Length: 208
Image (cartoon, rainbow, N blue to C red):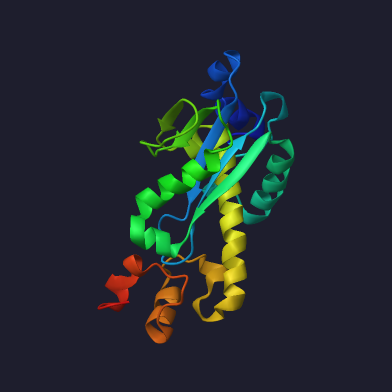
């Protein structure tokens, strides 16, 4: 039987409930964009009070685009804290994608001092409060799933804007990921400033 929104919500606050019972504000942190060939890695940190939870929240990869947009607006309205962190292609090339992701996560969380942070998979962060890393957290924790939606919608909107600047790469469709269309465009036109040089060397070869 398919899980209802109410059933999912009850399941996805199992990590949060004992923390709320201790009187803690619980923040979720997640990222989008570690794998693409172009564009930034975007992270989000979100705190939604337990009396303002939004039904339908789930791992952003499992939510249709139209519903993600609606949930994004509902989460923004419900959240007591919502902030994104970004690292662009140059920072990713200089720091590597893991360190860029960590820096962006720390940036997103910087204003949530004293919260308890639930983080999707990443460890070794310097956060302004205690934290726990949860593998596949975006499918298991409401707060991490909320952060995944915030990050996904924010990044997708940015990639659609980039498509107007660099229409040859199809960013509105592929969001910077290495689709056949995107790779063919890279080989035909070469990289634009939004491409991650460290990610495309194997495609283009030589110095890029």
